[in-house]
Image (cartoon, rainbow, N blue to C red; front, side):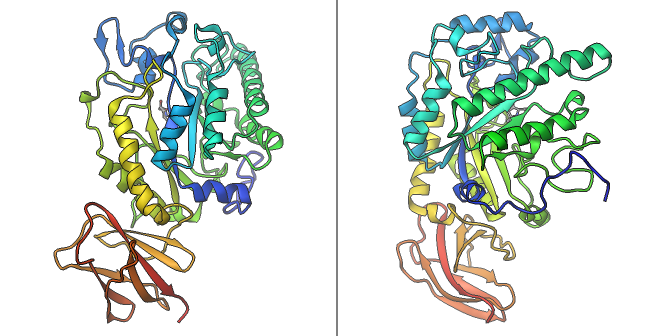
Length: 437
Ligand SMILES: C#C[C@@H]1N[C@@H](C)[C@@H](O)[C@H]1O
């Protein structure tokens, strides 16, 4: 192996309680909320169909002009308790909040920046209100933090001169200060999800990424850190130059998922995917007609797909500037919540089953049980199941406890009958199994 000073600190999955909780949570929500919610994708009368939180970039708005949006930041409908109840009803076990996105506006009153909620008409600590409200509902809070900061004069996309080096060193110190501030002000935070780490300036400072991870772990024992923060001695990201995962879980699956047959390598490590409802809108965009918007069924399938491969799924919400959510997002949260209420046991605490993928849907596994989550019921009314060598199916029940017939058709092959009255929409059959027979 290539000797590395800033490569992976650990081989294999973390096995401590904090990581187990991260893993068992399985379903999270993303909150992308910042100044970008005010223009909602429109600038000087022109609508941009790129991601709304990148509008400053699409419309080439100078930082000082963009940050003047702070004068309008006063979400009069914002109620952290209402947001937390919506998350609980959706069945998410954690929420990732954008503490600071690329624009540099901080949802907390950072003493290291003039671009924070404290300098807006709203004044109050939004992040603090949200952390308390979610925690009071038993929901873990994770912090999204963008290293790239378009508001900061010392940010550099690349390091091409001594001046760049000196400025970027100041920037990294500023970033350390903000991270320490977040960790000490909000000690119940469970995870840092870093973004905006793809520039050459970060790749050339792999040492800092390892330092930032260690600094947070010293301040918050058990905290989890995503792979996207990390760059090794040679600028390799997520996986170091020896192919080992850096950070505690892979975070490369943004708006995409590993193939359930060809990409089974992901089951060897922890990973978390995140997704948007439109094709690519994280922050609030006024006009969702500009791209396809996923149905609850399509969102559900992505959640189940991720868990079936041993990953977590985070579904994104982009609150309006007034602090309320758009109708489509409220309806989505409601629809997912109804399904999770009925079938959540096949998601929470579940993992990759290691059984061959079948066309009718997905498997998840917990203890002595394997769950079949059926999205595509076959005309044959039989669900073909192939178990690994040495594994037998003892019994199959639908969630209301009713048994369905299981017929062995060959060694390690079974037909599991569809329930006589198949429920509307994706449903779950629970298999009692016996292994090493
Ligand atoms: C690119 C990019 C960013 N990564 C996603 C999680 C959003 O924050 C988007 O703006």
